Image (cartoon, rainbow, N blue to C red; front, top):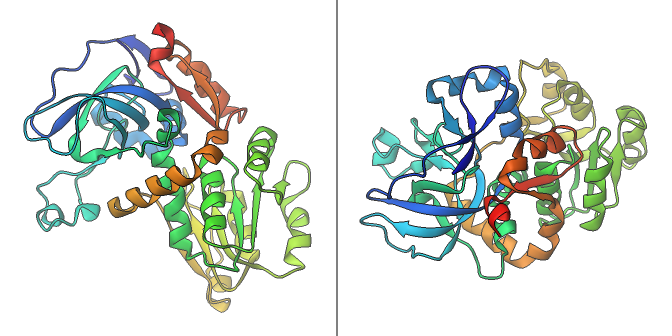
Length: 349
């Protein structure tokens, strides 16, 4: 089968022909991959940015951690999953042996590894994964939309971490897939206003408009402080959520935050970012990091997907066969796409 792999230290991914995985062992399932999304993490792995050098010990590895698939077969001891069932995959695996796992506190596992990062992932036709990482997808959700489950859990967690509540004014920095999901969950939480800002992101703003968002700012057209001025004239924001990984937006984000406001960081930054802690203290502001969603929140997100799958379809802007996966990476890197989805079966359909 064809698979997109990280095979060596340094920039670049390779599309290779590799052997199909073996039959699943106890507690595992074999999935026929339906759709795999290109994520910012995949772009970082491709570029070999400094914050991803920990992958070196896992090489070679098939990338791709946002995917849906059909259960093809189950290993011994697997319950609750049947062949033919569509599932979304929670990519973070736990060791089952550390002190946290022995207490059933799996979110605190100290030895977790990521499918598509440290373990073979979804940019392939077939993949073997732990059964406990597979969540049945509601019947109403199309398989391609099901591949959005993982990034949507990241977005949901960012909004939950920010404590967004009814009546809040929320600024989202970054209109990509994660930022779009943040906007959706902030709106669902009852935010009175959701402003989404980016830089030279016209195609992504088009998607946001299709999903009903109108307060959109492009800092490539007007500088950040000037673009925010009309909104800040109404009062500063209750919650600002950063999803850019760009250090330059952090200080202006704090300046846009009200007294007792919350700044949530979800972007992965390649180097330390300076912060004015004196301003943070004097304004009683809070700085919170948000990353992986708790396992218990995945069913909540899947229910949101069941109710909003028609809206979510707008986020998927490109569908490509495996042979064009690297072209899909270029579309994502150049911000021409919101979500590129690779579908291995396209070439045989």
